[in-house]
Length: 175
Image (cartoon, rainbow, N blue to C red; front, side, top):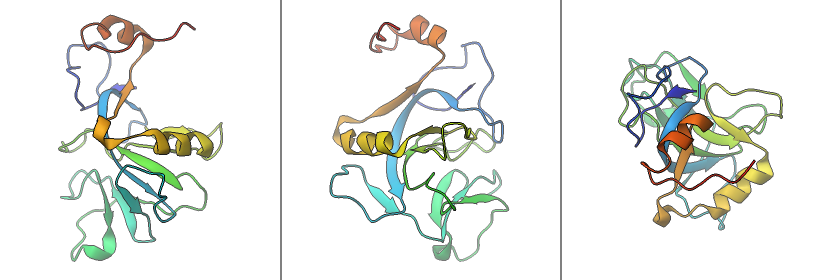
C-alpha cells in the first residue's frame, strides 16, 4: 500500500505515498463512485452505473486533461492521452466494478483508476485495485446505497488500530 489521496489526513503517517505505476493499493479512506460493468444496469443496483463498451478507457496518462477518468473515447474529439486501460478485456475482471474516488480532483502522478472489481483468479494480482470473486462483487454492489455515502477504508492493521478512535472507525472483529 501507499498513502492515497482521499478523505483522511495521512501525510504524517509512516510509509510511502501512492504514485502512478507503483502497483500499490491506496491506503486511506475513500468515497465510492459510479458502478460499471459489461452488462446493462441491474435493477438491484442503487449506485449510478456506466455500462462499458469497446470505447471505454481508463486514462492513466498524467499529462492528459482526462487523467484518472473513466471515459468513452468516441465522445472525445481530440484525445490527448498516450496511455490508458481499455475496459473491455478478454476476461471478467471488469464485468462488475466500482470507481474508488482516490486522487480526486486528480494530481498528476499521484495514482489513477483505482477500482473495486472482479478478480481474474485468486492468484492474479492487481496494479492497485481491490479484486474479489464475482459473487462477492455482486453482493457488495447490491448492498451499497449511495444515500448512505459509502466509503472504502483500506489501512495497514497497525495504523487502523492507531487511528480508529481519532477517525471514529468501527472496532475490527477479533481474528
